[in-house]
Amino acid sequence: MNDSVAVSPAPTLPAVRRIDFVAPLKWLARGWADLWRQPAASLFYGFAIALTGVVILSVTASLPYLFAAAITGFMLVAPVLTAGVYELSRRYLAQEPVTLLDSMRAWNRNPAGLVGCGLLSVVAGTVWQLISALIVTLFYSGSALGPLEMMVEVLVNPQHYLMFIVYMGAGGLLASLVFVFSVVSIPMLVDRPCGVRCALLTSLNAVVENPLPLAFWAVIIMVLTGLGLATALVGLILVMPWLGHASFHAYKDLVE
Image (cartoon, rainbow, N blue to C red; front, side):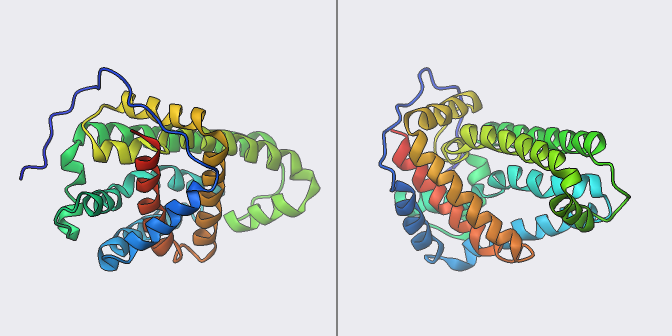
């Protein structure tokens, strides 16, 4: 069977469902089950994402203006890297043959949509890098330090609290916008032949219909991702495919 599908924008947006507040816990449970159906395939993507993060942070390790932003920027584009994980869950639900090679064909199903969404993620990451550098330039008045030393200095020195508040506020706003427009859009682009606009607007509608459950989901993602980062990115090997599988089930619950 040829997985290539001609993509054209859907004439109308798909309907979104209302979910209960604890639905994210169910997504985590289903994602955990999917993770261990073929752990080698799922963890392959986790390893690839963690390795990408190590490379990015290694490149910026000597650039204090970019190091912290690189961490956040990496997490903004990481969901696009989990397209293969979404494809694994899609095939499990559809009872289709599943191998690691099959999951890599996710990009063949809707190349225009996924590439378009990937480019938007890169733009978001780049914008955050620029904003981050601008905030540091405008608000940091201490001596030149390495990236980790500068982060500690900002956290412990009251002189830099305004910078910390502005930095976290700007980062939180951008991360919230990315979440709103990506919570179901990328798995939707993997699952069906729709355009980027259709996927982004459907994701927005899902958040508008379910603000509290999806806020809870955002907190869960933030906590698990934070734990993955706190283990020198090793924890991301498990966390990212787990969240990827769970995110696909979130999309299936939310979108008709």
